[in-house]
Image (cartoon, each protein chain N blue to C red):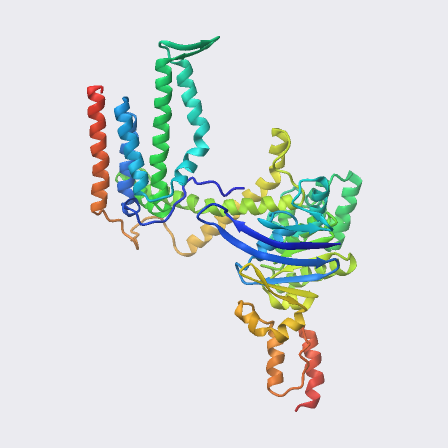
Length: 267
Length: 286
């Protein structure tokens, strides 16, 4: 019942996107996500859409995965679209009581939905093609320059690594406890909301206890190996920028420039 | 009164890249009153198999019936039958959650819809059965007990539901020898005094050989051996080794002694019996 969660899931492979350096991927994704919001014409949206699809194909991942990235967020997408459609003033297309749909509203709603979908798709490509370890490595490197103003880069990266590492473990644990309590007649699916919240107690208490126990054990294991943060630590796998990164980031910057020009010319 | 598994197959993650068939056409009848040992290497499908016995997993194909009722149905009768099969998972103490031991044990009986008096009686009975004094322990927090005691509370929580069948998955994992002995004594008592049918999953051959009246060996989701433990250890050693399961050390020792010329019986399953056999056999060395 819990195996349809794909957030932060990595799918191994050897595509162009998999081979890119995590730092390059993070930078490229950030630039592109900002660039998506520059699009305001059908031509620009076409360009953004085409580039997103191109990147998706480049990742060589099954397209079903892309759908599973959007699925959990479809309520937000529909809600955002609805708000724009029903609240934007303009030439009325359809009126019934207080409901008033305008041409600008419809256009705005569709635009917002398209932006959100492209945004989700593109950023999920980052987590699909980058292993969590490399991702946090990349984040640590990118945060390093800010250490002088007191950003604890290594500690943040370590916290993220640990959190990501324990997601599958805790999901397994949840599944096990749910089964064990179901075997004792617990019911997690029926009843009113309040009743169902109460029924969660036999699940949540053991889950919290086990999470704290694991945290404790991990802390002891780390101390036993003399862990003391990122001071003078060397790595087994150094991150390296190669030609694929220049091509990848270059392509994103090129698209962004085109989008800026389109936005400037108001095409 | 029996659990009948008819040609069950179970596939994890149907329609995903991680699709994996864990059970291939398994058929088995577990008779009332049996003490069934299930053994197999890691990944042989043991855990998947036992979860079918009380409907936590429903077979992809095939049927599981308890006392003649198909337990994958959503009827009240099927639900009742699922509750006839108690399940003790690995490290059951990790599932404790109530503030007091008595309340935790009462969780199962309460879910059965029993009256407060009946629940109280079940709790007292179950605690007595696992050797926890009601007056001393009932109001204590389960989280301040030792590992072995916590496990006994967890087992009491399942026993309090009065199951006809009790499934235990590695009940002695992580306990010291003394704790293991206690847990096994309890299980044997449940089997003998209450007449509960026990299904014990383990990869410790010695434990199983000592207690089980019937042994089923699983490998790669199939039943490879099914029979009396003594017969399997003596006559199917190669098959056992092929699937990565060890023969109990007692059997190996006795075999070695026989090879060295000591006239000892090969029908020995526990250390005590072995000592007896050696004392008897030693008097007429070949």
